[in-house]
Image (tube, rainbow, N blue to C red):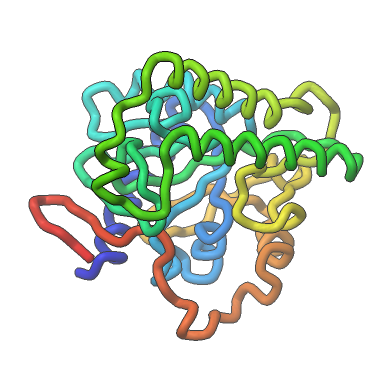
Length: 270
């Protein structure tokens, strides 16, 4: 079994746990991005993809972040958020398998590591284009400051590892920046806006915006041996994101993006 196949095996366990937790907490989730594409085009993983993306409305995301950790007590999973791991810099949470350890390409940092699934909040965004530009600009500026202050780097070096742990003042400052970032993301939470966005999306701004109808109407499709939630309007969403999404990319683009090394069961996979 090669590296990507082993990662897929572990990620299916992570996904099954997320589904179980959402059922227990009466919350909704849905696959997004490459995971949604994999579900529709491959009925499972894109064979060369090495990560998984799940979306939730902000309300369900916050409920999951609040109540899931208690249900994970004594389990081999850890819910990594900007607040549960002081060294973690991103604005979305991850469900980590604590029985594994990974190295990520171009992403050296001191946050906890394990095979993960990304869980993204979808926040209401304003209708006005200028307000949208203002929000995403302020979000990205804070995101960059947080990533820098949290010690993220492209490569891991002995010098970076020898840096002293951040003192209380720095941690307090980092926590405050994280709170400011979250406030920006939730700025339009109480409005009647009909549109929602994954503000942390790797795609260009307009490609991962969902309407209220798209985000609330879900259906189930096969994903490997699981049944998973996806937006009923997946064809419209995937077309916006990828164009002719059923056509495979050129072979030279079929490569894993994130994980360079996996350690589990006393074995190393590259």
